[in-house]
Image (tube, rainbow, N blue to C red; front, top):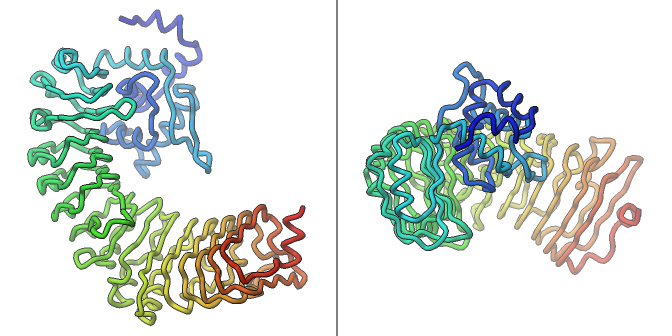
Length: 491
């Protein structure tokens, strides 16, 4: 058993002082990390949602919950409570670990409220019978059949199942968890024995975080899950067998993050349930699939959506007025958007629908796919998306390129399969800016089968001064590059 004087000798004085200087919410967030096994790679996005599920925020905090909790993590990271950081291309920390001594200190602070349980059943029974346990992680080392004994562990707030080295659980008796009525977070990811959740899960009224990702045998979610009025996160990504969602999903009024996977190769997809428009707290929704039950206008009230969104099934939008009611131009927190149209002959209707789906000018990344109309929507022909840094145009029937050179922050541009384009010239550069493509670094063209001529005329202004790479493939009729680009790429 660790004593405080031991940590005073082994931990650096600066780290101890940093801990004592922390406000109470950050102290709770730090000590909660003892629930993870030693040397465990912590996913920051999951950690933030788990902290939210435990209501660790300062009650006086004013602002976006996820932003505040992210700041908690950044504060702890700056004080060296975490290490081995992995970052994304924007420099944000996405994964980290804790030093073993720091982990022991966190475990000491929780006074055994956090349990790390190995997968032999006797150890499991012993540990989960400890009445002080509030947060438990079960580590699966091999293909295992569990026989939980949770009679005296009714006060658990967190139950995480961690699969070691890709091992799986053959039998996971969810029915025995009916007594865990105080659970706030349950993570059963990667469990191939779960075909369905018991309807009693609807009695977990305190549950805020439910992760069922990679439960590949999962086929249905019980309708009772829609009674979890406090649920903030529902993760069913990579649940290959899940095709249908409960009809009462609209009752999850506090749901902030709904994560699922769209499979391009599957003919039968998850369809969003009727009533999704009532989920006004949603921050994360990776896909919005327009169908008979889920209308495009249901997006109107999803004003808090953040991150990336892909809209599919646009062929099911019957008229532009419905698309305009989605109020996409008011979704100011979205930074990434994919508009996925469908091959068809309804050109006039799709043109009007596309016009009505004008994004908010804050957008950073845009993909337009399968747009089978010969004319671009007006918002693509005007410099309206001035914050755009990434743009993908794929399988487009338009006959010319829009004036993308007028986008001042565009860094990555990828154009694929535009079979009607034969000539690229001044229209691509635009005419209203002194520098065309001032920040463009990476430019790619592929499958431009009819493209024959590419002209770039400076006309007293700079063109692509920041260009680092140019890739052109499967464009057999293009004979030469403009002299200016050849000169730029030789530097």
